[in-house]
Image 1: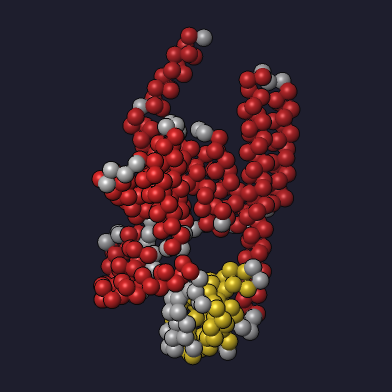
Image 2 (image 1 turned 135 degrees about the vertical axis):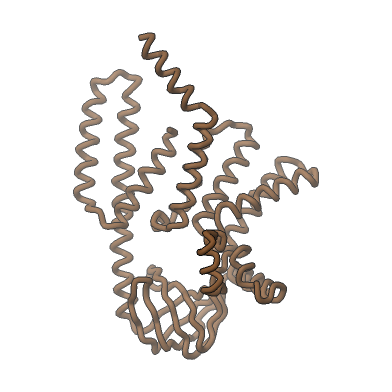
Length: 341
């Protein structure tokens, strides 16, 4: 197992434990005792095994850091939730167009806090991606976050460049697809706000609800299509592949960089780079890179989409290794060495 994959597993597990409220002090003491024992054992080990002990100690330290980061984020989230409940006005970045009598969602951006908020609009309007000030609302805190009823909106700032691009694409999809625009926007630009409950229920009953969100499969299909176009147009391999990577990266940023899409884009970039450099790599190493990159936002480790995406790809990679016979060959070689000794 590559060291980068071990580090990815330790970091994800430590962050998840911290976010779930694990006792940081108890785990840190356990990690410290384990590190001291490993270092003491390392003094009596042969030179070729010392690096394993040092690697284990380094992974233990990485896990302790991850746990501390997760616990700190959990405390910050609790403070932000309390601040959102006690506020009298809120600054939100809207995820869809708002108008009177509409029900919209957004993210509170105030003092470094990011809290998901649902708003029942009574007055005021703003386009998706705008920063607005919400006043005269009745706050209610539930399992899904903060709900603001009878809210009045006042625009503070227009959408950012990528949000403006999404708004233009969304308007074009509305014009072209009509009644099917909600489904088209979900599949093309990761905008699921227009999906009706009936449509979601039909896909859920068919076991296909995951298709309604941009996943790693979507990004992989786009990357493969771009590479086919490069070959069909007989473009230079190096510049064509670099261009394909850039287009995939811009697309993922434009749709809001969901965790599963970021993982797939990182894998596509790593595989393309290895082919350009003609360097063979372990599939587990590229998998670790794809799994780690979305964890730039540590809360992603609790995202169900990221968990399913990573677990599914890990299963496919393990199946490929078993089918290729590499594990059986390694086990057979180990058995022969054991019998010879």
